[in-house]
Amino acid sequence: MAAYILEHFARLELGWDPTTRPDGYIALCIAENKRRTGALLAALAKYRDVPARVLGYDAMTGNVEFREHLAAFMGRTFLGRSFAAENLAVVAGAGSVLELLFHAIADEGEGVLVPTPSYAGFWADLETRDGLTIVRVDCASTDGFALTTERLDAALATAGRPVRALLFTNPDNPLGRVASRETLLEILRWADDRGIHVVFDEIYALSVFGPAPFVSAASLRPSLGDRVHVVWAFSKDFGASGLRCGVLVSESAEVIAAVDQLAYWSACSGHTQYLLSSFVADTAAVDAYLAEMRRDLAETHAAVVHALARAGIPHIPATAGFFVLCDLRANLDAPTVDAERRLWRRLLDEANVNLTPGEACRIAEPGFFRLCFAGVELPAVLVAIERMGRCLGSG
Image (cartoon, rainbow, N blue to C red; front, side):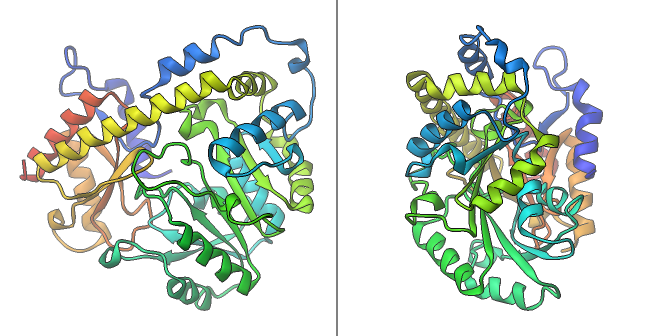
């Protein structure tokens, strides 16, 4: 387990409190949205009349009613077109979706292209039990970490193994930005020409608060075909990572059948399915929740980037998700990963603030850190930024 995660759990019980522990630990390293937890609990509390059927066995990829409700909800809110229930598979979280999907489409030892900066968890999802190898497609800060087909071709040419798929995250983590329609179409054409799968991780699709509209890969073609798949979950947009409910959207009957055969070991609780099915089918309630969640993200992000600017901390503003990428390269004592580790430790020990190091996000240039701003209360985030500024000598 990464050092920043180990430190997070070691310090969690000594968290910041403005009255009792003003020098307490502040976690800005976990990509969770706890800003609307009370509203979500209040919404779910309406669905208390749990039917007896949820206590028994059901389809391991989600009961039909839930998948019908999900298909309707996802289709109208972000996928951009309708899907049938049989095109969806529901299992215990997006990590399980990825593990099962890649077990179905790739063989042990094969490669999967992942553009960087990246979500840190993909390595565990794909390499631990599937036995795959992630082939990094390193992007650079000089052009805003843009993914180009030239970079994809270079990674493919040097992979040293057959490459079965490209895993592309949109909206992006840790950059918090939305890919354009043109970029998505270019990626699809590139993958088509090379005969590889593309898996679009759209787990932040509903957490877009900036002016750039979100475009789902599902909306770009009349059919996804057999080699394009979409992954989503309730963990991010609904701040419900503990409910363990991820969704695969695929129009490949073979892929859905393969996932169905494996889903017994990753099934989502019947009670969870009932709660979430009731919520997404309650159009007025779920739409009100999402609208307020996005408004809150926008306001919180604005306060955070203002505080970072006031503290003199360079950063890349976001338009989606719960994070901004801080550029602390000027604070390194050398342009190395070891120097980045030393800076992370300094911020942790002197400021008692835990950021996600760029190393965890596989950023090729040392000195970038992800700051997650929705996992703790805004006053705690602002205190953390003040501490960081003092520690870095810039604020």
